[in-house]
Image (cartoon, one colour):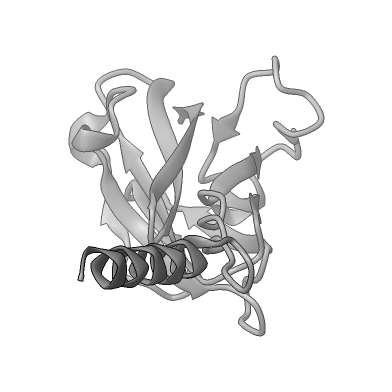
Length: 169
């Protein structure tokens, strides 16, 4: 009886060891890396590109080239994300207002890279791609007035933000 109980115990242990063996089992794949906004740059009303000249002042002038300016960005890795462009009177994104948003990713208008032409009007409106303008007149105390543009790319694991200071005329 004791011998048969021992044999049964040894057989159970052998089965448990076989279940715990690493053969045939694989670790789950690592989670994808978080979305990173690797570049955010602006070509201002006078053609100064912050990507090429990061230390130069940037100006938004409604009288120069009809107030047009360009924004471009790049994210990594290439997957679906939401992109937001906002403006605020302080360097804190919490104080900003979104004036452009887009669904981006593989096969969409803005994939890993994005580009948009925006405008700054005489009545202090910022607008991109026929989206609703945002009026910044209440933030203009002196001319030129420093405003902050925020570029925000958001994926399933959070958002990445970059900021540029601009002088609004």
